[in-house]
Amino acid sequence: MESRRPPDGGYGWVVVASAFFTVGLTAAVLKNFGLFFLDIQNHFGVPLSTTSWVTSTTIAMFHLGGPVASALTLQFSQRVVIMVGGLLTTSGMVLASLDLSLPWLYLSMGILQGLGISFSWIPANSMVSHYFVRWRPIAYAIASSGECVFAVMFSPFFQWLIEAYTWQGALLIIGGLQLNLCVCGALMRPLETTQSPAQETKDCLEGDDATLPPKRKTIFQCSLLTKPELFLYILFAIFAAAGFFIPPLFLVPFANSLGMDKYWPASILSVLALADLVGRLICGWIANVRLLRNLQLLTMVTTLLGVVLLLLPISHNYWVILVFASLYGFLFGCVVAIHVTSIVDIVGLEGFDSGLGLFMMFRSIGGFIGPPAAGWLVDQTKDYSTAFYLSGLCLITSAVFVVVVDSLLQKRKAVEAEVHQAINKPEDWEPGKVK
Image 1: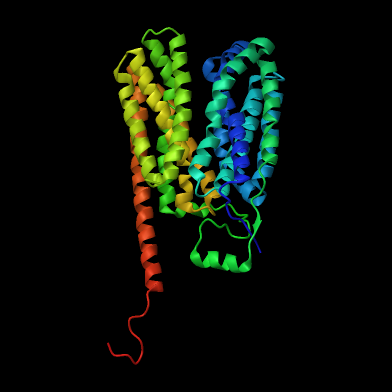
Image 2: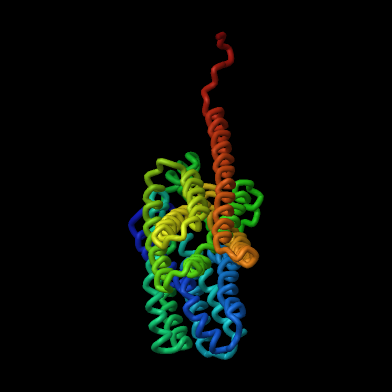
């Protein structure tokens, strides 16, 4: 009988490499959308707020497409969905390069590109989690670091493309690059191994949670929302996302408001990206050492991240701000390295695909609320510091939900252990025997 067991290596590292490029060709491209804003704004003669709806639409479709991507993954396979995502992202960029109108960009760069990113990013992360158990944290950290590596390379490359071929030509070339997502998807070989019936029976009796059921679940599990642990973890995602999206938007304006030369704030973003990469890799390694539970580690780094953001605007010295920005990037990378894989601890590997889709969908709430709320505070107070205070408070609040989730999981495991022990406990009393 056929079943699937994570090999924790072997071809799994090819999957990690493929996921690395997939994340780079999706999330890193999205991170550099801002390079096109000024040219698009000047081309159509519209306010910057109108142009920003292109990125807002892309981010919305990226998150809202999560459940759809997960459902399609369960119905078909990660390979198929990633390849479809590659076709969607390429189509979006090619159609955007036609330069028909601004609403046309909302459809192409917004809806098609956003769905394509969702259909590629989510199955790629799912595939890594299915191929690894023991090395899952470090494998996911390596895969997710593609976002940082490609973001650093894409920034000067995209700027050169715009100067050499205009923004329309740059979008066409980027669309061609994203077609390589189909190659990445083709490398995502379904995890299928044969196993003897005796071994399968043994695994079932032992409750081996690293073994997936022989038949693929084809139904998206919305019922997972009834699990209090996942519901609370989604609340963590909402508050954390509200805090995540604020600092990158306000770091440069905050530095500019202090009278720094425009090149200094740009260097802060470069250092932040490198610190993010280091944080992902180091935290992935720490999670593999297993000195702490994933949720315990997540609580610590999220709380520290909130504290750093509360302290960041206190000093108006460039070097102090650079230090705090580096700490922010490092701790942000730590959170990213483990916050997705922790879903497996909550819903198990069988429910991971559905759980990830729900997680991404609801996380969009925080992404939409956070930046506008921070902008409103800045407008009211005329002080960029309030944006960082809001971000820090949101992240510290989100860490409280992780503490509760970890506590509930530990209680549930304790109860299950007691039940298991009671079932397997030998009878102290036998009929006809006097104690």
